[in-house]
Length: 349
Image (cartoon, rainbow, N blue to C red; front, side, top):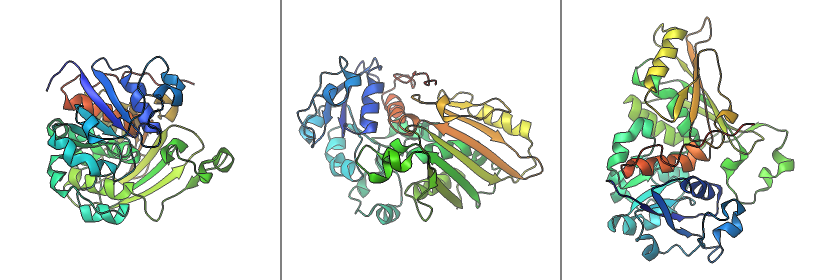
């Protein structure tokens, strides 16, 4: 499906993922943002809220009406859970592609979805049109979809870390441990006392140990990838930085594959993937290596004297973990080069 310019609508453009979409799309030669909506900020100029976009966008926020959005080729939902569901029927019926950065379409079992999100799912009939938007795993499904469920940030870093091991049936999938650490921007832009600088600076904590919404999402996709039941222990942590995510994933090897073989396996698995970088043997990725970019960087280790395999994976939670991956999915949907608008180099320091 090739076309010169993709007309884009963004619903919920006032949050961190919304402004990241605008930042990325500003450098996309075949993208035109024609509508950006916000009920609370209708009439406000985008550049007045986000001065970094002065001179780039002359748009003002508008009310999110179906009539406005039906004129788009694709609509990104950078909204709370439940919003994309409420508009998906009318948009897809009009031939508009939907890319949801929230969780409305991420879990195939809708009873499980309702349990974790506390809402009734209203789009069961649309689920056959949905693809889970992790291109490195589900690219062919993305090409054919009308609705893209953009993955969560933790699932992106963790599923990519596990893909080579699962593809080659190398690990005991009944006992996987994923330890995730995220910057504070993952909590969103809304006011929250726990996210104040004085509350979270110079501190480090786990959260969601008893249950995190990304757990059933990862379980669902890992079962698809492994084609069997899996056991996953997931513990997320909050670290005192703005952007960035590091996930350390631990599993038990079923084979006697050594360090050099694992390194080669990972390098070969991702050799053709623009946005996954397997680090050289003996090195470890840092979150600053991906800040502001759509890259996932990872390293694989087999600790001496152990049957464990350890994979460390880093992404920018707002880019590969959200807006960048959404644009990557849009490029796939419209037959554009997958890296269009996504060639930003990570920021250092």
